[in-house]
Image 1 (tube, chains in turn green, orange):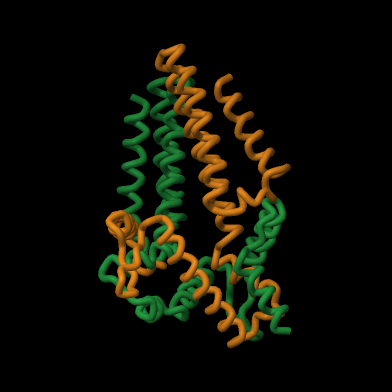
Image 2 (tube, rainbow over the protein chains, first blue to last red; image 1 turned 90 degrees about the vertical axis):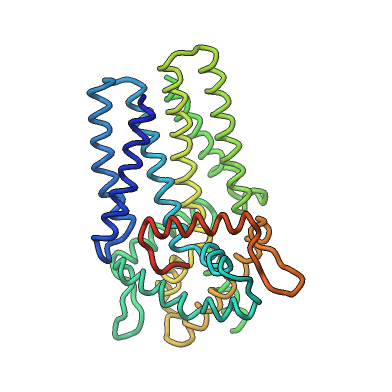
Length: 169
Length: 167
């Protein structure tokens, strides 16, 4: 029964999120889902506490709901930002030659979209001296420099650029 | 108690990776790190599943679900962080701008375009190795049936979330 409550709450989150995204204009999909999912999650926990009390069933319902919410956020951010998914959807309409893929999927547009996203997320801004990180952007870079150190994984594209730059010089 | 055991297992799993395994070549790829987490999830699911089967009861199965979901949340978070640190184009742009020395106009754009092209090439190779894209004899690229199914699911998700620009 707790599984049914959990799945009902998750389905409600997906439906309300879909409606909210059509009403919210340019708001970020993740932020909207966190807001919607958070409110419905609190309601689910309240309902489970009233129905089952402080039992493993309440904890299981909450964790199941949290897992599916995280999976959903992962999937729609993957689909919205992934180069692989972009290629798949382009190839779904017709087979393409390598040159057509390059034409269809212009690098300039790819970069422009990333800049737009980073600007909308208040991470990057265009200053008088060129592109600059905002305070938030600098914080993200600092956090990820710690993650890089912790995982021993530098960003492969930055590393490659550094190598190419060193080679060129 | 069952949840505490699961949390200890997850701490040990993360600790083992951070202390010893993070430099292992076998875990240096997306596939390798995914297998590391999948194997652990399998051990937790089978272990707690056998325990739940042996003892039975609604509470035992609820603990089983708690353990599996907790592992799912941990693995998904870890793998997302790992993939972002390793391969994110947006983070690469932020880090390059942060360095400052190369963040000047056309030169920066050329370098970022080169990254975009490399990423596109590497992703096409990855899609082929996953069996989602095939190369017919005419030198073009086309989707396999699994690729069509994945594209259909992706489109459904994009419509649901109301995303019009992607990739």
